[in-house]
Length: 85
Image (cartoon, rainbow, N blue to C red; front, side, top):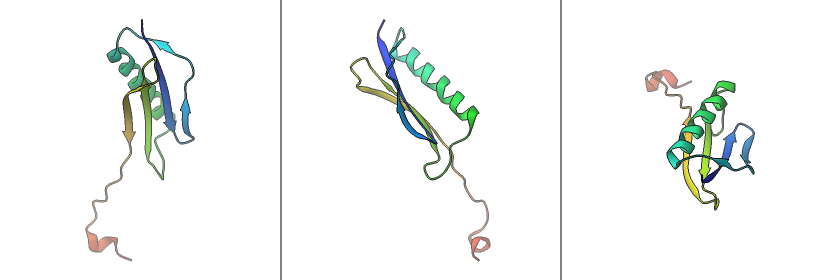
């Protein structure tokens, strides 16, 4: 089974995993990355300035394969004139 590595990016910055994990396929490793991202979000939504959480997936040669991101975006629904001081 091929090994995959993950790099997590959260409110504390980036952290690479030195441990390789065995998965049957890239799709199985991506599913695990999504699960890990959901756990990270359950611990707290992303905060400014980036408003993003991510899990990057690497193959056994440490080549990047995919990045799964959660981006928190606030969209004002007030008319422009209501936003002025």
